[in-house]
Length: 578
Image (cartoon, rainbow, N blue to C red):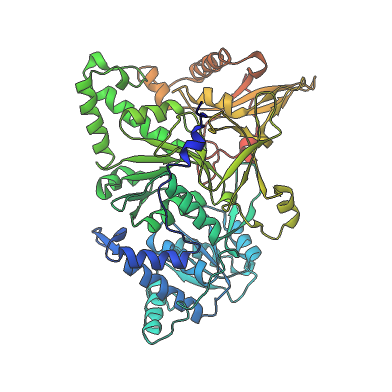
């Protein structure tokens, strides 16, 4: 009898073919040679006209900037990059990571944190937007390296401006200064230094090699084919490994094109200008797109097909479905073929809804320390409620699973980081016998599909040893259209040592106003609506997981740049209305 193979084993026979690369310089030169005049980036000029940057121009610009950086003495030095997503950011990242060690920094951080990261990493040069550089220069006395060079993406008259360095580097290169061409990269040494600000607290320096990231590019291409005709619409911040590896470096390896979103309020406009085929996003963005689509359907369909606060699409007649699919696709630019979702778990119902609209939504699981992808849904196999299957050349397993099969996810593969920056003890605690201990809880089914159930540190343990994963309770709360966001915590009462579930809730006032037929809710009405929502969730949960108290927030929770709610700081202040 033929042995029945798991889906994870079947997947190994289906991988798309890849061409080996181990460093960014080889990747850049390879792509420029193969794709030459094909478009690498679509940009807007000063008049708002869309222009194309071909691969051979990208290579030339990276070499020119890199040549200038070498001439200024930055070979093998730490070079920071900060600013909004832009062509200048991408060129700077590639040049800096080939010439020295690139330090991508979150543009949304407080200036004190930016300066701290510059000092800790011993940054010798920082390239970025004027806005960010001016904030640092206003506190220049805190910058420990007095010789730090500031390179502006915006100022053109400055001798250290990005445009001037490109010009000078180009001239030097043409005169025979080929130092950049002669750089030999050790693919296994530190070349990318990232400071994470995860949802559980203080930032850590993550040390990545170019082999780490190149292996992840090849593994991702192996399960999700990128076409040369694809255009990636870059929305998420590029300093984050998720966007940088999958939304920037992967398309460049593949010969595809990239366009940068001009800002969240311009998404609809940009979609219709650039006509993307691939969008990387976080669940929050996907949910917002879904809400708009459902709302538009309910407004434009004949009355007999409309539904209150629900998706009417599944019950539409066949001929209507075809029309709706075309209309939805047109609102997203007309060419969109796939959403890739990461950074947190997506609602499986929303994933399923997009699939019905002929818009496959592939969610995955990753961490900065893994360059970032570990698991993903693929071109070949998808499961709406799962983070997917192991990517090529990467293994994962559950460490010390409990009776439900839930335990810490540990990972092994060429994508696993070198270690934490200047923290040998933390590295040894996290990477044990080659396995990276993620701090995330999950389980694996018989087919190899991974399910994320929570964070080790966020687990709430009751007095009688029951484990409650806040994300599960939050999922049910957030599924209610009258609730925008929630954060579930474990609290203790003054008179006993039992742990009780408290939910901090940010209501969706716009949806509640519609629910109340146009009237803004009073405080009493708001309390009643949220109370009913909490009661409804409790009915779906066992007693020990019941929400015992809740607070109503009047503003959104603080989030990381990938839109995950921070499980520390101001968010942890508990307001007990009930």
